[in-house]
Amino acid sequence: MVQALDHLKETASQTAGPYVHIGLTPNFCGIGGVYDADLGTVMVGEKTLGQRITVSGRVLDGTGTPLKDALVEIWQADAAGLYNSPSEMRGSADPAFLGWGRCPTGAEDGVFRFETIKPGKVPFKDGRPMAPHITFWIVARGINVGLHTRMYFPDEVEANAADPLLLRVEHRDRVATLVATGSAPNYIFDIHLQGEKETVFLDI
Image (cartoon, rainbow, N blue to C red; front, side, top):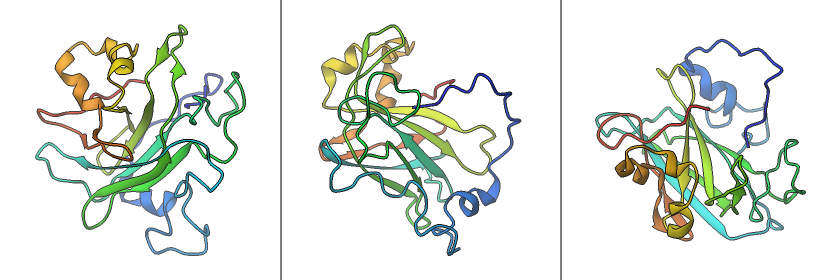
């Protein structure tokens, strides 16, 4: 869940540069002694409630080539639809679920992978229920501002059809770019930065 920070001034944007992994995933870069493990690597534990799933995919450029130096973060609700956030006022989220993950794309195959749980439904700002989804944030060299998008689940057809955000997508054939492929427990979500299959990105 993105925390409201309307009391702060906007930080000037700049490219992520080639150093984003050094700062955010030092162990992945072979730099030890900063963290025992890179932050966001493990989202679930033995006591985490909900259906365990794996979400994997690639970040693809306009030619369909996987980026091998991108960084992907996800945010999501727990199995009951509650966020692990100070802004969550509807109840207490599962303390055994981080609700946030970070993964660099693989240096060899460009694949990111998250071991997580399937999120519950959360309300839209007007109270209508949104379909279960995971929010993605992508940075890489050449991306001046981090890109936001969402992943919905292919086995939530009815909920997706009524989702308030998906209903706002003007070109209906592009809704499919926000829906994963595969089935439980393994979902695949490729993110296309450009081209005919360009993923819908959100201005948030």
